[in-house]
Length: 227
Ligand SMILES: [Zn+2]
Image 1 (cartoon, rainbow, N blue to C red):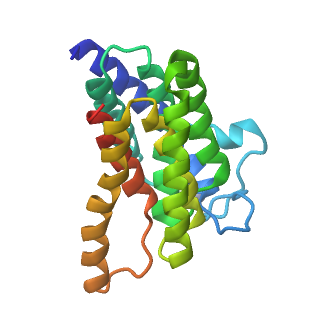
Image 2: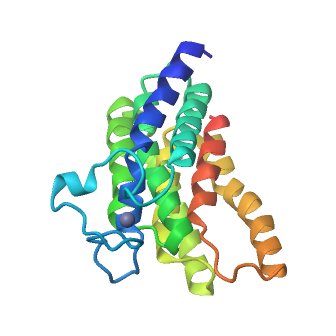
């Protein structure tokens, strides 16, 4: 493990996640709704076009700090550097961690995993990984299809959403490039993390419906440690 690499990765994670609060605020809407055109708290409309989406800092000048988001982005990126090390695969995983953190923020707020962001995770990691590790394309696809099938049963039985299914398949694809141990740990870990938390919150009556996306993403990160 190179300390410099970890520091550089954490700096990337901190800098990129500083842009996420505005995106999370705009994307955290109901299933059929368009992204927010203005602030949900002070009702001020966002600037149209690109500057209205890309803003470092808090979601709106009326809202509070964004330290937690930056700290989360830095931690995730730093952990990826520790786990993957000085590998040409690291930039692909770092790139995918940006929409992944955004997905977790949105799922925690409104129980949604927007398709275009799941697609962004798939494209930002999947395409570079396929170019760097063409020998792993078939195992990665097998992992994705296997998880897709298992989660489809979970969706039919209830308890899992279609967003969970799509994200789980994409993460299995990405983990597939890292090897079968990573897939196995990455697929099991979300249930070991999410299960007890869900049980606690349901038993104590704090929440009825729980987002599973954050557990899937943390599980994938744990899965990479097995690579
Ligand atoms: Zn506002």
